[in-house]
Image (cartoon, rainbow, N blue to C red):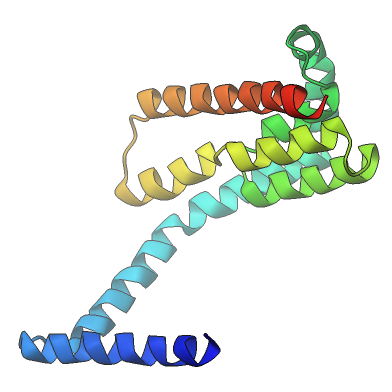
Length: 173
């Protein structure tokens, strides 16, 4: 298998170059134009990425998670969601890496193989980084009207959280 994987990438590259020559396409020029377009796209979305990571850093260092746990505790307890998960539920739509950091702290705090840790890991896998993804795609395309997308994405996030908690209660309790 290792021998096969070592030869697979060069074979794919040779196939692309050969097909481009067959179709009379300047492969190197196409590659360079694609690389330039990729750098322009990365440069265009950089302010959005910096803004999201800056907001998350301020939120975490300013005790925002603890404040949200206090605010949303009654709602979470009414839905049988442990209050320890509120920070994770809040951060996940903003940043995947931020959510992994919050999940890591959660696992250290409550312990591995506890119901709360299992719910947290399921939530991390069952939801999307809504704001990050929207900032990347819509920021690059300069789309300003994001209301319906945001509403649907947040509803799906909440549905994923509720399903994660419910399934963990059914499977692990």
